[in-house]
Length: 187
Image 1 (cartoon, rainbow, N blue to C red):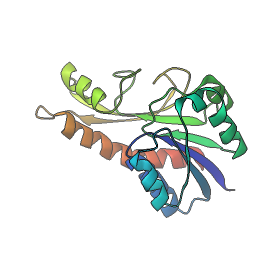
Image 2: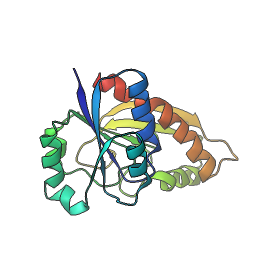
Image 3: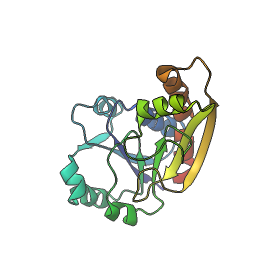
Image 4: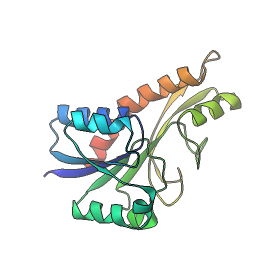
């Protein structure tokens, strides 16, 4: 049976592209919509090249129920956050209980919460002198990065790592594992 997936993204969209490529290469039957809050985001170009329908919205439309209505109208089965920075409204979280996942670039509960995304996380990891970092895939609830953990994968933080080198290590983990976990949860 065909599944309908919504991917929420705000930025570059490399994880989004890896997810679509993985599902297509594994012959999964799915429809996908990209929901994006940034009309200048590169992820929109990726969606166009992948022939994925896009829905661009603003923060007000997320908060006032417009986005929720679009999700229901399109019979979305599962929501994936992929570099999406806004908190998901409680109406959507409640309706899609355990059907929304996010990927975070650290080993939660460490280095999570509001403002902890991308290079902010990697800088905090390095500043703390942690010897490992990694990724956490978790269900989304009403708080930033507090949902039930689905999967974690660790990597070493080397003494000579900087924000950019650690970011690359984390991105490799994201690209490899996020599509596989989505596939497992959705199909």
